[in-house]
Image (cartoon, rainbow, N blue to C red):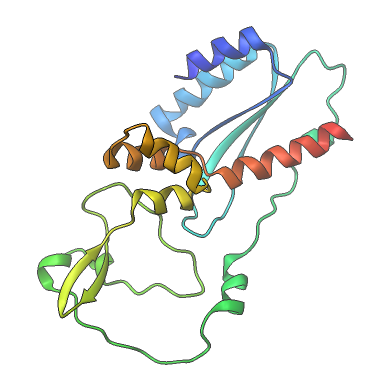
Length: 212
């Protein structure tokens, strides 16, 4: 896919573009993948600004890799075009303002052994002031267990909830549903999407810089 992107960039020659990937891109294939990407971009006569960008949102804390490129035909690229500061809201501080202040433990029921087996993650208790664990698409990952009428039920995130966590509005999701996409396709698309608030934050920063 990267080579298709490179072909489009070579044709369009945008002033700025952003590539995003997971942090493992740096170590993939012993670093050969990222070196190949850098080589291709270098052959396109571009200045690379490759750095880790850690953007926290409510549902996850995954490190991403962003590559922001600026045309090399600029006579001089000023320092302001390079990100020197990472800004993010700390969800821990926000939660302290909205969390219930009462201390105590409420026991609903014990998780049945057949559900968690030997996987201790299923019984882990996370801090209400911390970040939620990353939402996974795996069927063997931890679930949310709820009790209804004495029965133990597994509460899965709905496709709509997954799209909301990625920052998409309901209208966008409804258009996909009306197009006939199945739930499995929707889960996959939500999982592969880039969180919109991340792109908005980076784009606003670039827009501000370019306007100066």
